[in-house]
Length: 246
Length: 204
Length: 97
Image (tube, rainbow over all chains, first blue to last red; front, top):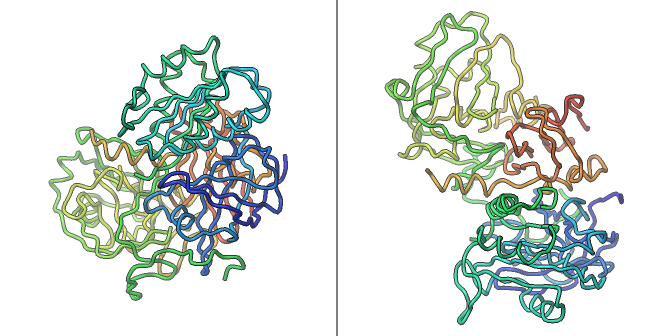
């Protein structure tokens, strides 16, 4: 394993993904290839030495060398996310360390096994890295992303995901809108529940590798329900995000 | 000062009245929820509070009995080791002096281990609990103390860092000599005087 | 039922992934993939699945089965202090200066 240390990255580009979400492309002096699902820690330092640190998942696949994309949701009263959203411009330095975590990762030896991704809100970020990497390596394993968002405005990467679903017959995108669905929407309009997960699991001929990421409440409920529905706990990997921007 | 810093990044500082804010602290109007574990749910029918250890006859109160004890109002500034201070907090509760009227302490009792529902503990010198310096808070700002802030009852010792003010208090154990509690074992100060910035064991 | 408190409580709970960076810096080890046994309830599990309470004077990791204390990490200006009393019977506590 590579030794990680704090390093000063340069912000190369910033993309506004949704009204509350931005993606920061960081150029790293010491780039280490990551596994999709891993994260970086980001540390802000004030002039008086005060520091605040948060973890952000990598959105880019390891094929994008020398740099990483971190997608950051603006959290109300979040001192780090609000500084990133309001105080950071291309060219600015940011201190990061990573890549971190070898558990919540999609590995190449899983590329022949079915894959079930379940995200709530910005929990889609590490799953996006998995989908991007999966596309890059040309994997053809049956894959479903169940993505729970409040409104259409909150569906991060929606265009890219829909494009991916169009091009890849083995990849299915299922959106559910928990607060307000777009006009004419005929799909799910509720929180992820047992009936929804039953429907999703039916699509798989064998137990998929499950990755669940999002707010703590969603992750725990989904993981418990998947387990109740018979998916072995060794097949369910979870990552809890902190409070979301309500 | 930091060799690397992010321009324009810093804590939002509110009006600082420096005489009342210990060094290294900043004032907040919020009441941040800090937690080292799940919030215990304590039905009032089974809640109890005990004094035990080096006393002649240990004593235990039910919720009803405890609330029947003489209560007082307290207005205090509180200082959290994570660097926020909150001024003029209003509490109602039972002074530790009132509780101590019910027991005879053995002469060797010098320190107290406060223990809580859940596995939280914190150590305090006995003298820092007496003479009007500490109380068990039952109401905060006119309302029953919320569970996330330590309700139904929390120890409040305003002159020490707030981790000494154990949430979900269950009892006080009187000891001969000092022993570390939950955060003290993990590296925090045995005493925790905010005016001396005694945050870590290395500051003792 | 006080739903608000439950929501706050659960929202403040993260998992072992959240402290992996700090521990990797200290130990030069990816802790998330560690198999471990809780010394309180003896249930086996993966480090990444521990419950993490990160809003406090330090980081606290607890067993997802019994809520028992597994690990405490306190960062001070003079170094990090790691206490791992709850990890396994034969590991007591390690202090890293």
